[in-house]
Image (cartoon, rainbow, N blue to C red; front, side, top):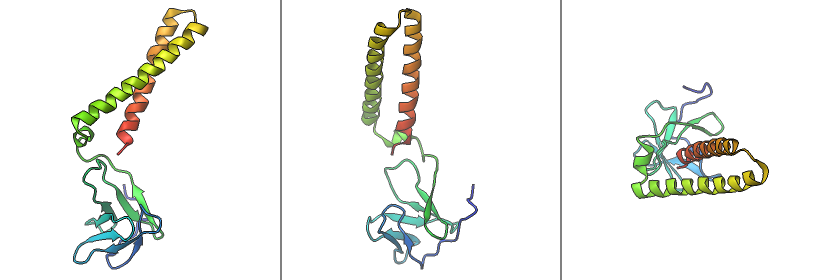
Length: 147
């Protein structure tokens, strides 16, 4: 989907860096890329001439930007490849173990709360499962959005 306010990006012009407030993107000589004079990030001009893409080997999402005439606007994109393939197996396991620890802690606090306020064990079980599912979904979405 192409935003209607996109303008062509020219290699011979300077643009404000989308990542550093005082940075300026300038063409890297003999390339179709821009470099920031402050944060040292590199952005490649795409073949459409309307977008630039940040070069980042470890980031699973391609950070793309378009020029609206005043500043570079971010374009949200899907991950390139499998997210879990980017992170090592050990890091993935550590993240999931931390998530399970958070869920366990929340459930223990909830169990203590239920002993004080609720008398029905079935309602206690249903609420515990519902809270665990909601926490797991929120943490999974948060992990997928990190990067």
